[in-house]
Image 1 (cartoon, rainbow, N blue to C red):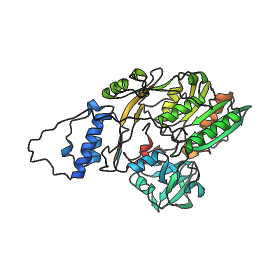
Image 2: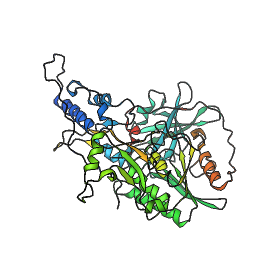
Image 3: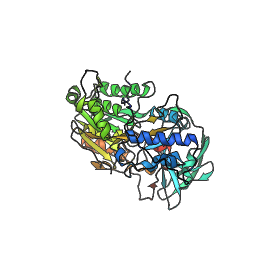
Image 4: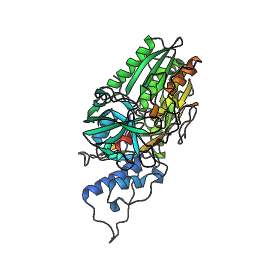
Length: 464
């Protein structure tokens, strides 16, 4: 089976910085484990970080908090690098395995002070699915406490947790008396949340809801994804709609494979460029001079660490147009999939502006043998562009058709009453679905940001 992980070769540290050894009475007497972490952070960031030349001169011998030290080193425009004290949990998360209930919910303000959390989707075969929790359910309390901007995050991750639900009546959210107690389990989360072939106005349309670019620890989710594509091919679909509304990223190799499966057969057969990668100056030069393919010659500009080409896909569907559904949670590998297809297929984007991440990261663990600690960094190391040089979409990618993903009126995946899917079907056939009227009204639901550096936000990774 093919594992979708870019191979990153760690080279000897290229930067050695000497700090003054003069006596300083203000120098803190830090524990050895803190000094080890700080120097590991300093050396690793100066080696691989995309903005290594802009790292501030902060002596690791003076920093009492390694996590704070890491964030103090970041480039001001970097909102995506992070650090964790649990490398094993991080690795499992990239494989789709987390301690979770299966609820993916979006918190937001419903009044100036009141917070609710609306279920975006439920992971298949999870405790949440077993308890009949569904997309659009409104969480108003956890463990008996009403949600606020200060408590919603820690309450959400209590285990076990009792969720209290409410309903939107068109003007306010009111309790409905329903409570569900869930215990988080180690969940191998299937990123294919929903798929089907929709028969609409004489067209067969493949519809896929995809929430993370991961092949799984044993390629199980790669096989699951291929099963969906096999179903689409067998049904002879005329078009494909990929729902990336809640997909924050994952493997860049896997996004390239999906592009090869959906897009131009000619481009795939020609192994045309999917994306170009730019590292820091030291690594850009290193990859050009290195011989990854062992042919006795430097790889030059065509190094696989500088150019990712469209891989072979036996399931190629040769779509001239591919439709994507997006929100502000659509990030990273999701965005690379769309822009990577720009030169070869018409991409129709429906929804709202994406997150905006034209960068990729890798996991950096302790390189000492034996390991001295279990921390891991996930620094940004590359900037990517498509074959035409399109990049720098840091403010997100705007949709072709602006359609709000209003979770207060959420419809099941695959329903023609879902306004984003309905718009895709209209663009495919020229006929707008006759949707039910739900009397949508203006409401004050405003999304809240996840607290910085928390694991739920860390899914916005691109490569490792």
